[in-house]
Amino acid sequence: MSVKVFDTKEVQDLLKAASNIEGEGGNVRVKQILHRLLSDLFKAIDDLDMSADEVWAGVNYVNKLGSDGESALLAAGLGLEKYLDIRMDAEDEALGISGGTPRTIEGPLYVAGAPVRESLSKIDLDDDANAAPLVIKGVVSGGDGKPVAGAVVECWHANSHGFYSHFDPTCEHTPFNLRGAVKTAADGSYEFRTLMPNGYGCPPQGATQQLLNVLNRHGNRPAHVHFFISSDAHRKLTTQFNIEGDPLTWDDFAYATREGLVPPVSAKSGGQALGLKGDAYQEIVFDIRLTDLVQGRDNQVVQRQRAEAAA
Ligand code: FE
Image (cartoon, rainbow, N blue to C red):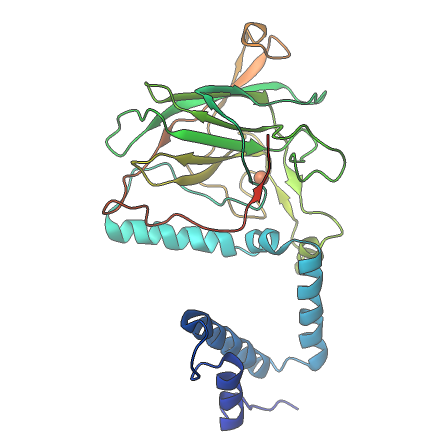
């Protein structure tokens, strides 16, 4: 039998007590957010007549999610990270900011601490027999379209098996394999010499894939390369590009693909002279346009827990 108790004084008092929203001390913002989230949850239990078994299945799921270390992965898979981007895009539009390279999600696999090189870095430090050489290059410009010198371009991507250094359950990589950081030259240019990444999926036994299975959704991402671009005079850009031609380009479980972030891949020769492992290589030109600070500050810089390592 379905009952409705959410609007009773007993439940409303319980929500106030649990969040201590009317009490002294504590963090006022956390109290406000928790009171709202808990209220929404209680209301959903009432509205959907959730059984105790269903609620405990959810509680137990949160435990597994934490022990698997997949909260940030699930945030990407359920569109929460995309939603934050949609909100930032809307904020930009409201402020009249346009013309920058589109932002897209960071994902959970960045590692801080890559050594910063001058304009060029070769970042494939480990052999990967299945991966073809790849050059990623471009020019960083500002809101005025002029090249930005001294901007720091960081990139990170998976190997041909879809694994990232620092997070690879199958083997150890050399620290910062397939992760790099360069300062743009006077003409705004940057270049990474690396290997072609492949797409990847969520850990098959993990909490994220477990939920996706129940939803009849896949947990795969198309091949892509992540970027941070930082410059004192501009807002930090978090973005990615997809490798053109990947069949999952527009079917990314993390909703990161955007128009303007699928640059063409060109076949080139002369790789040996560049120190690549073969003469034939592929090249992706990814020019990046930053946006200006808003009243002298980066109004959208995101603080979150990130891995860090020594090179
Ligand atoms: Fe990724």
